[in-house]
Image 1 (cartoon, rainbow, N blue to C red):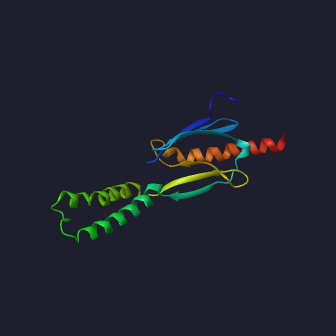
Image 2 (spheres, one colour):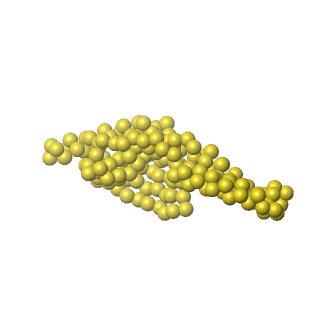
Image 3 (cartoon, rainbow, N blue to C red):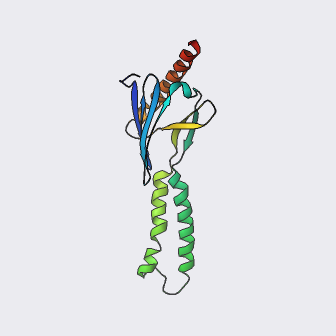
Length: 160
């Protein structure tokens, strides 16, 4: 195993941070998920398919907070029909908080981001690379280099 990585790439999204490291024989992935866990894995290049899936997707928080916003707006509309629930009261003002927070989160997560999925030869998702963070201008270069190294590893295996 080589000690010096061929490349490293860090992608950041609202809910996760991940660092991908490419060596001559494997890909290492390490990261953390917001309010979740840390993860770390390594995949031999010969165990990764050179055929990738490219998708554009929104952060998973978008759908959650869109639903929360719609439901909380409906609840507030119903509550405002009762006496004592109006914008002049503290309780009435608090009813506006969930829809406003939902609107802000939906605004922050509305934009779709490029995401490349790397699969096993059987089609199981192994890891993904997101176009996000300070290094996002390198995204296409990193994906192309990964695919190139995966193909080379497959060719070397075919020769041996």
